[in-house]
Structure formats: C-alpha cells, structure tokens
Length: 481
Image (cartoon, rainbow, N blue to C red):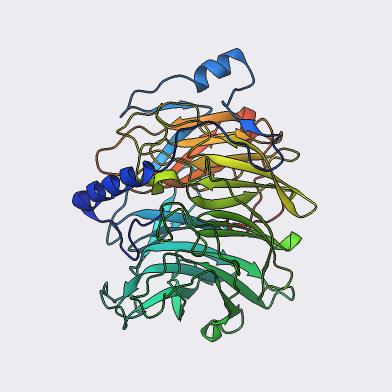
C-alpha cells in the first residue's frame, strides 16, 4: 500500500477518510480515455472469461456490497487480529510449517500444522510501518518506512527531520516460535518493502531495499532518490549486516508525471522488487516505471529493460515472474489502495495487471488483467499482492484485490489471461480488505488488513495438480517449482 504523504501511517476513521479524499483527488488525473497498448502492440485487455458457460456465469455474477460470494475458492478459517497487534495487517512469508504475518505494529507467527486452522504461537510487538516481511533460511527481515525515535521495538513515532531512524530490522528465526532481534540497518528514505537474493556461494543474503518519496526536509531522504539500497547479511553473523551499495537505477531520471515531480505517479525510487536468483533477474515496480534488472552481481544490480504505460498505469506497485522466468506480471495500484477503482467509472485496463513477456532480456507488453466483477463506490478495490500457484506447465497466479477479494487467473497465454477462481470479500465500513494472498502447500493464505489471518482452499479441479511440498515461500524472492 502507498502512503499518501511521506512517512505517515493512516490510523483511525479520520485518517482513513482523509486518505480516501486525497486518493480521490489523485484519481482525477487518471484519464478514462481510449485504451493504449504499450510495447509491441499485440496485447489487449482481458474481460476474464472462463472455461465453460456455467463457469462464466459464476465469474460474472454480481455480489451485493457487504455480502460474500465465491467460485472455486472457499474460506476455511479466520484468526482475528488480537493482542498488541491491532494496526493494519500487511505481508506474509513462510518457513516450513510456520507463517510470519506482518502488521504495522510488528508481526505474528502462526503454526500451519493443521493447514485449514492455523494456530497463533507468538506475537512480536515492534512498530514501524509497514513491517513488510522476507525470509531466507534462519533470517527474517522486516521493513520500517516511518520515522522512529530509535531502532528499538520500544521506539515511538518521530516528527523530527534530523534525529530519527528508519530502515530494516534483521531477526534470527532459527527457533520460529522465539524470534530474536539481531540488527538494525538504517537506509535512505527508510524501507517500504524489502526483497532477498542469496549470494552465489550461499554464505550471505542480499537485501534490496525499496523506498521512495524523498523530502528535502528529512536528513536521510533528500532528492534525488533514484536508487535502492543493498544490504548484505552474512549468515554466520547477522550483526554484521550493513549497506554495501546504493545503485542508481535511473541515472537520467525516472518518469515525471504531468502532475509534477511530487506526484505519486512520478518515479522517485521503487515501491517493490521481486528477485529470481536462479535466472539472475529481478523485476522492479518503481512508481512510474517498470524495470527488469540483471542481478548476477548481487551487490550491483543493473537495469536492462524499462517500460512505461502513461495511459493505463498510475502507480507501478509490484511484480511477479512466471515459473520459467519468461514473463512478468506488474500491478497498478491506482488510488494507492484507498479508492474504489473496480467500478464502472474505470476501464478494465486501469487498476489491474500488465502482463509482459521477456524476449531477449527485454520486456514486451502483451495484455491487461483486471477482475471482472463491478464493485460499488463503497468498496476500495485495486490489484495488490499475489503469488504463483505452482502447477506444472501452467502460469497461474492468485492475488489480493483489497475489498475486491481474491482472484486466481491463468496467464499461460500472455495475450489472453482468464480468471479461474475468486472470492468476493464484501465491503467493510472501516477496513481496507485483503493485502496479500499466497498459495502454500494446498491452501491460500490471506493477510487481511482488518479481519486478520485467513485460510482459503481451491476446489480439487485447481488444487489437485499444484505442488504441495514447498519448504518455504518468500513471494518477493521467487524460487523455481
């Protein structure tokens, strides 16, 4: 999710109302004009048809706001937010039978021994939005993208522009039920998200730290901020974690929106990066630009392809490779996750996904995908975090859409993505909806911003062919299935 103003977390009904107002203002600049197909011009917008007439009727069925509907994906359990972690729920990473679920107040560890009924085993209170989580072996990394008085878990929010801390926190999770805080590393403009890539010798892990919205009034976040920070963490000594480089990704400047350099649509860093270490590739969603990087030199990634879509994309939010590393699905977080963009007022090319093939290490646009169900103005709905469903020979992704719920779609044919399952979450009066939806060993787990940690399952027609022997899942650090 994108903060509307630099370094602010949105708390309470008043903050939500203000954010929605600001998001609505931002949306006025997104023209509902004719469709443009960037790249090689072979793409088209998907209307998400399915495999049969009955399935198509189910997919396009209207679900009244505030009510729940589903097709081939059903909810099994919910563990409500509780204890000290009552702020916004965020991302998820998996290790063995455990799930680590981020929250702006810290993170929670769940035991998935009974997959359909996760059991909460511990909470760690350590506030700092948005506590994006990533795992490599016994290392957990969390992101802090809000100014704190210091790096400790007892820190408070800071309003100072000169004396503050933000960046990443490094944890030892050799015992997942008792995470140990090992090291804090300050990074420029904090850390909105983080993504991991192991070194080729396996002795270290590199952290690609994404951050944006520079502000000259902040000591550690001045313009230009056309870079990321790279942190190296030795597996043998987590306390030796340190920034090893700050590669400039946009030496000639990134996209500048007609709304001005301070527009959330203008590139000033990256929002999210997904690595695919096996292929020495990473894909970056960088506000106004989508990029493909060569990460063969882990400490010094280089941009090898860059794409823009100034007609249909407002905010390049995240990226997902297919299993073969030959495609990238980029998401557009139109409205920052705070506005209703799945209404009839927005075209099917807006606020969804752009599917790109990788041809000769160059990104080539193919098509758009957006959920086909029309939501109301009371339901914030836009593309957000998802992961592959590991089905051999197919490219299938499951994805959160805030109050639009969860959608699974098949993009094996890059020109013609098709929705194959969905869960319509229904509207809520004071919440945002589902943040992340990831498939892990037979179940889809969702971090709902307000309802908590939820478990879903596909019907057998989808799930029977998916792999269920994963020992870990870190969606922003893809592995080959």
